[in-house]
Length: 417
Image (cartoon, rainbow, N blue to C red; front, side, top):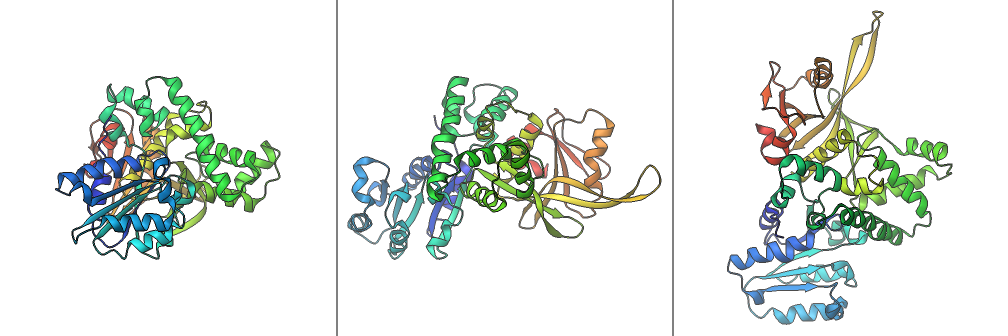
């Protein structure tokens, strides 16, 4: 099964020969190795690069175990570079290489070598790994399949495709599985036997039950405002746990470092400043989120919001939660200060969009509720409501655009419709 991942291929192509190490990061099983060793490798050959100028080492292959020794792998690579033409060095599962940071920095001294590396454990996936290369690492973050990528290989219409995607997510291997039982077992085992094990081993975590409980709390609260203090209260009241606030903060950081969840900070639109806590947490893959909860809390409204967040991130946007403070009259004529919420503020360079994720707009009251925060933002950036209801893109008298979920997800230029 061949899945095109053109965005990431173009990301790599645009970084070729930039004098930096291309570091392919992302959640486990998101398709990093396939991107480099299949898609990018095929591209190089299509551009006329000779096979012997593409140096590929899969360090998780037992027959390559000897190359996990830093001196052995450096000698081997240098022995293959026999002329002044460009060479492409592709290293998979590089965290298995002893002193891999030093090895990669040494490879940078080879003037005609272009270096690409991937890895698949939490040590390598840590978001601060780029600092190990002293500013000479260039990160490309690979997300699980977007809905558009998923639909390349899904055999069915977009409506059944959405039902499948919002339940089992976009990890590439799940797409090839034929039965629900296979997918459920795979996602649950992957979470427990791979992600949890990596995090606990890297950080020497002893309170494994508390870590699991914390992940479940975050999974249950997708789309809701949260913070470590609120989570601590949940542990004490519902789980009868005395886990400390600092431990909760550390565990959340470990989970984020492994790219299991991402945070969306709150931004005061009128005050033009970040507010801090509370904030929102979203799972990098909704299938993994559902697996954590035993597929028992599949609220499509919250999952749609999570998918919209991931789509924006995959398109390269910085994504925040918008807060719009206003004053309004109560029923008894008093003025009160309230904060309206915009689901997402998506920013990329000079581009900015305000977006609401609304599962449906069944009546005028719901329409007013979704539009109210947008109407109180007095700038010229585009304001959009995404609905699951099937509707053509429409713009109202205030410039607010309503588009349906499928148009948004399947058209990479949908924000400019």
